[in-house]
Length: 331
Image (cartoon, rainbow, N blue to C red):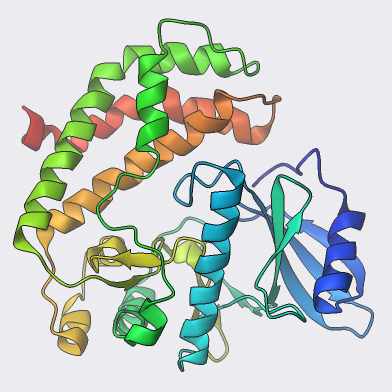
């Protein structure tokens, strides 16, 4: 996230780190990196470094519709990541457990805080894999997807659901009345109204893809969920996968669509799974629909002008260009 959250005090974060993890923070430096969570670089009095995430329980549409369900889903995701690491996958950047064995702690009524080991490495700022990075990630994903049933039993199920569909359909159904959440609410409503037919078309197309994939069956595996290059750290010891709040059971293509442009034979040799092109299409399309839902969601609620909300309304304004990629299925 680009902007500091207005309702979180760093002293409260420091207090949770001390109470939950025994991490006595000497400094907290806000890091405007990634999206979907707030991040801080932490340094303890003994010199230990950590990476702190704070998640808005009102803003994780794939985990639930209430703060309680999102908190439960986030904890389950982080527990799954820890189980993967304990299962012998050291490249999984899992959270550190608290003194009570928990992977996160509530921070007030709306947020949750987690502490991760500091990873000394570098990720791509634009999310695109290099050829070497793509090959390495395919090898790592094969190991994640082959994880045992003991790990899989901890994971939530993503399956073939469209993340944020309920919020998208609610927005489409409320285009005939003003949105009063903040300064970008009405511009967002007007932009969506101009593109309502496009969104409806793409939702229907996603349903067609999902029905096709379902009809053929196939194994579901533990998936990371967001395997763009921004979630892959290059370190002196190899590659590390970060940001596990989207981990869930689903078809392998939930991960593979982002890295399957070349070299997928590496993955097939390791797992015996041949790429399902329709599943790739499904997850590619639903990524765009998910993004639209996630950008609309804060604009329909109380918000203030910021770099994040300005970016969100611009995304909504230009969403109709997404249709061009799917014209062959629609025309």
